[in-house]
Length: 485
Image 1 (cartoon, one colour):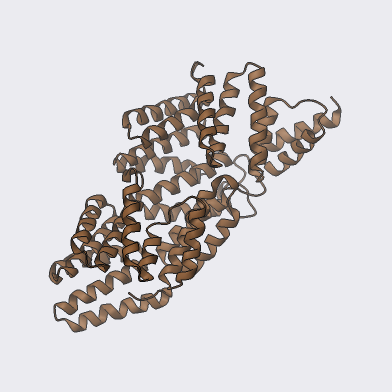
Image 2: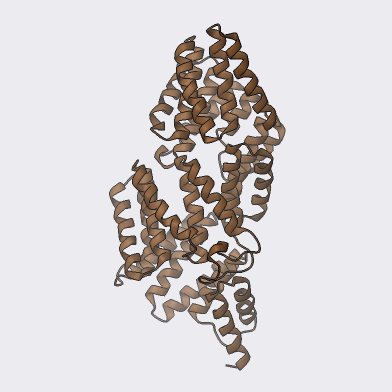
């Protein structure tokens, strides 16, 4: 092997150690194009990682397939198992579930009979997610506890943070909210302190923000979205400024940027920063990698919601259509768009179908709550007061003591009470709802609730109070550029 070849491979390995992925990719890609020797399995795994970070997802998969073959040829089951799991993960992201399932089975084939090793954390994580999806709480917790034991044994901060996030996800799905959030906080402490490698930093931001969205944890979502965007911001160093120099410093493009930006869009939407949310949604759709098109779909949905509430119905329809093309059912936004278009029956049918198709509402509390709130709204629009009451009651049960969900439930039940000509009970529900929205700093929902409060005061004969609430609502709608309700 020539000296230039040795130098190029050594420099690529060094670049990977520093998480300088564009540099590593350039060096190994050049060597792969004109090889003086076959690369090792480890070099191919570095090439796969570097290709993924550099935006070449197909090359990443191809390099990992070669790495797996090289590990098998060398009798290295741990290496082959790790390569198999990453192939499963990448194929799942690319929308190829059969290939993903096959490679997950292969990972178990390589790793299940091995002595305890760090590589076993990854299939255990997938086992936990699959058990959670089918409602097998015991199996899910057993898998996350196995992850934690392996992570502690390995001494890897990356794996320990991942195992804590995985257990938090299982606990959230089974209603053990306080325990789950404590574990998630600990995992994210390691992330925001800059203790993890770039891959796990991005992965944990994405996972934690997903969990926050599903659990309606607005405060944590705001805090961690801001931290994630700081981490992603160019010039990218991979770590917050206050931890610079404490470990490997990645450089170049960050494929997590679009994913984190898509999470940010939802936060900005709730906080009423609609112009920025729509701009960030467009940017996120340009930035997301090919194996995370679900993030682009979520961004399109958020943009559609902004456009719909501003009366830009044709633009909203286009945004929802883009989300649908990427595999996401754009509900309840599409149902509320149909309602705004005067197609109330289509709105009812759409939201009812979405509710029926949600396999397990425990996995996405906020998603379920938004569907129930929309079901209440469209039922009232077609004068189906019993149907609206049923949806509002289900929302009340779902809400528990989660502030965002409590505000949604009180608003929905207050609207139903008004439709039933019971203004006093309505006001008793709507006042805490309004207080909740104001405390959460969610201006659009606060303004909508003010219109209901105004209606309750008007029904009770207090015209001055009704005008005061209606005026405050109108001012908020004007600031947002929203169509008044």
